[in-house]
Length: 260
Image (cartoon, rainbow, N blue to C red; front, side, top):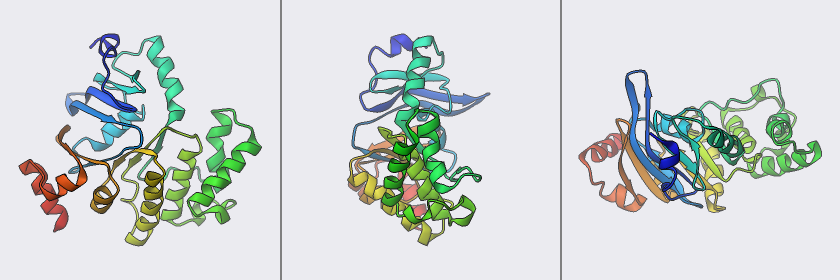
């Protein structure tokens, strides 16, 4: 696919995928996905394991390169099968504008909480250390962990580590936050801590694309629910409509299984 030709009419949205496919060898994981997230939306992506949700998020985060199609940020192509100089430059500029929180925290174990949060702003963006520390403390206060600034990750609970990971992603001042099953490795009490932080971000207007199995969050916080199966978007609807009356048999079966 000619990326420059595709880029003439990108899918509308702050961040978007257009005709996005991804294969690993002979296995197609994503097939012709079109998805746009507008500014201030909280789009929750749900579906069975193996449906391509994480791969989609990794394409948005520039951690995987599409086999076909493109990813755009503010209508500029940042990912495509071919990477001419202009797209590489777009991608480099976009990396700090896209924050990602992973399932398994991925904190640097040899850094304190504060060091984890300031590392990227100082090393990547070139922020002054004092300014980065002031911003980090503001973010740690936001996630309820200012008193843990000098602790190492091994001394924190899983929920605390995930909240530090959120603060670390926010420290780059991204325009969009991506969450990949951010609560799936946590027990119910610790999940609640993280979901409260995510809800507060949504209430503040942060643009969010959230892969989740937390149906309550999708129903009550999401602007839209996107249901995926076998690498494709099967349904894309407002939460109330989706949970009250999913249109496809596959989505209905999934919802019944989640209630069992």
